[in-house]
Length: 162
Image 1 (spheres, rainbow, N blue to C red):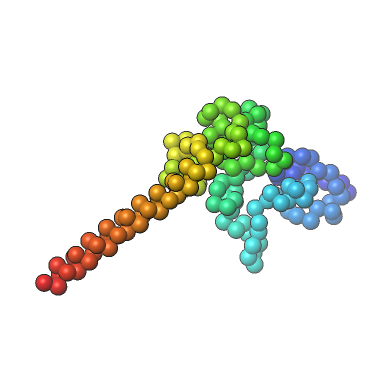
Image 2 (image 1 turned 120 degrees about the vertical axis):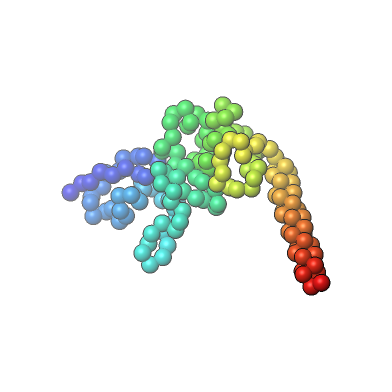
């Protein structure tokens, strides 16, 4: 008996014998390439490993990935033809904002350091060097505030001893 399913990554229709489908319908893919784009399952219950956000979105390396199959044709025109079945959401948001596909050398930086905060006011186009400086300056700033807090704490301890 034939069954028809839709690939959850690329949206392609799949027709096979029912017994040939080894995955549940919400994890059915048309190829190994699409299967590699699925968020991984783990644990004894085989539930999503805190990666699935829903609506064709999941966390990938701390960033939010979006399945290309859920994008509009206008959004597809803003993406490079890289052979992947997903796009990182911050790159999609920046492409929408500037109205063109990003070049391979262009990097989208998260100004506040939060990889899941994809509001346009938190994103900036830049180079790898600028991104590295952002991380170094953020680390230095945190270190500075930590040192100030420790100094104030030491002063309070001295004051309480008297």
